[in-house]
Image (cartoon, rainbow, N blue to C red; front, side, top):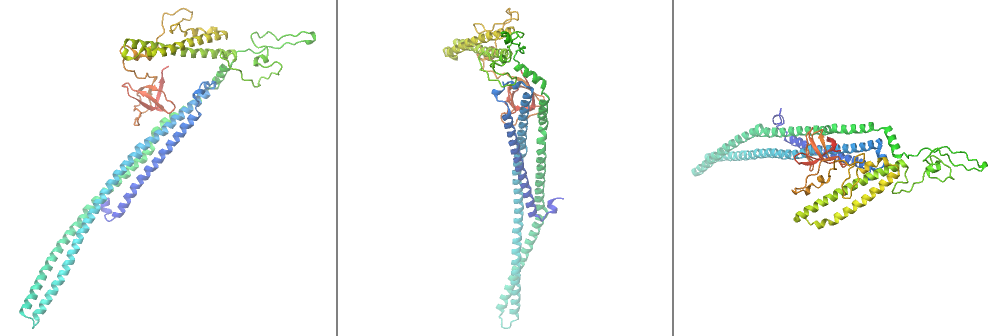
Length: 531
């Protein structure tokens, strides 16, 4: 069954129905747009929530950050950030595959419908024009036939009139004959117009309009089919990211199972153990014998009593849980208990070694740059590097002094047994490493020069600056189209080089072997960073 046969006389109904169908498509597009706005706002709120409760950069060195419960909470915040990224992806895909696509399709349907309706109106106007011609010829035929009848009656009456002359009779007959001839011509014209109209009317109702109505029916069915696909995409778009959302939720569950209360307790001990021994018993001081005995010497090297342990005035009562006054922080960490002092000094030494190594690398690089400038003046002026070289040398001397100072303090704190680990990182007068073996002898191996990688652009060939060195690699768990600007596509199982870590926005920067770079969703890959 089709509209051309069954609805041949329902033009107004068809026009109204198709207009209503187009309005439904517009309404659905608007609905999906509002849904994407909800998703985007939801994702934004999740990101802000994650950012709000995430530790600031300055807080990441706090002692609590080493606890598994804190680490798991940070993992949950990161998973929520990834989850927000998936909500944004849902909004983006819905906008691209439903809203934009349906809007373009809707415009095409409107133009096509307008064309068909115009064809129907033209056919209707043509039939109406033919009918007007038919009606005009019919009225003319009617008028001329009546005139012919009156002329015939007048001629007959004149012929019977005895008073009429022969000329009058002849004239009346000629007039009747002429009128009869004109009436006959009008009759023939009317018959021709009637035949023409009936033919066009048959063409209109049995061919032209059914064909147009069937085209409109096909248009409407295509609209319904496209709209149904949009309904399905509304669900499939979210189903597509469900596995990744599931991974995020599994990550949150894993964060909970990674909490280890026993290890957290051990971390608290390691961070806060003072190294003191418990004070010994106090001896009875017999003032009746005039003897003022000192405290027991059973705890050599430890505080004589609780007053010494907490730095309290001996005249005050000792309470184990009393609030301690905040000690004055000193550069040598002497305000800390022995165990914590040694750890802080060791940590400080490691920081100084790293900073000193950086300055040495900088000094070597400046030296190489100076050599390049001296051999190739067109590259630059060697004298322009003098201030940088001087500043770097001063920094190296300052750091050497700090290194010696903290090594002395560490030895005083009882860290002599661990000083070899720092001697392995000390520097000679030329800013190079002194490599020691554990027994104090020099090793035959020399320390690799890290500046070779950092300043490779100053080699003899003056090659262009190399790309940023990868910090790891990742394997794609899912396909990613990379349709947005700045992103890069990938296929499931593809291995890419990681150039830049996720900075909390849910995206990681990667590079292919051919040099193509771009961002991908962090939750779409498994990442392995270089150690």
